[in-house]
Length: 304
Image (tube, rainbow, N blue to C red; front, top):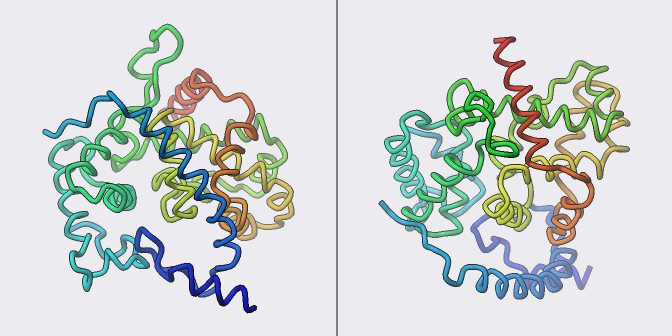
């Protein structure tokens, strides 16, 4: 208890991005984790510095404000400056820039995270544009010969119909059916559709789902390697907790277990977690993702 008390004195009650730590936060465990993680952060900072040398810089050219990060002191109206204003400006600008997408619920969390990291309206705007316009859409298959109708367009992810979002949730279901058939059988047996348990994972890109440090590491990979990282993260969460999920005996129980697997030491230890996402799911090529997206999208359009 004494060491835990000392750790609580050393670890701030509010994290560096402004999120208040919950009452049951394990300060001692976090201090132990972060003391080791600082070494990793330093090593990664050097790698990123080398990676970015000579790289081209990003060129400039009434939403859900009150529900965006209510536990973050920087988004409260009492904050000075209040990031709600910055968030509103970024979302408004993006809605005007890309009228085919406009604004969709969930985009506020993504833009809000970008603002917390960059501390810049303009940089956040262009990173949001890169995410929605270039990273989330499916890529062409081998030979770049895929037809346009086989691609999940940016607007589909955040448009009112959310066809791209629905497609990727179906893709995850197909991947689970192949790689984790027992989990797929459990879901089928109880009639649980994948959107019921993973829709927020996809639409928020794990923001407000996983711990801050882990989300930032996932986004590093998302910007660098593309949208297949989303499936690697989802599959790793499910595979790591497969036995726990298979103990579920009802729809409600399944939903609660999918919430529970996004908490705990496995997702907090972000460096180990990121190593796992590249080993646990096994082979997962972009060609496979593109093929599944095409078939799932076609099926959804037929059903619609």
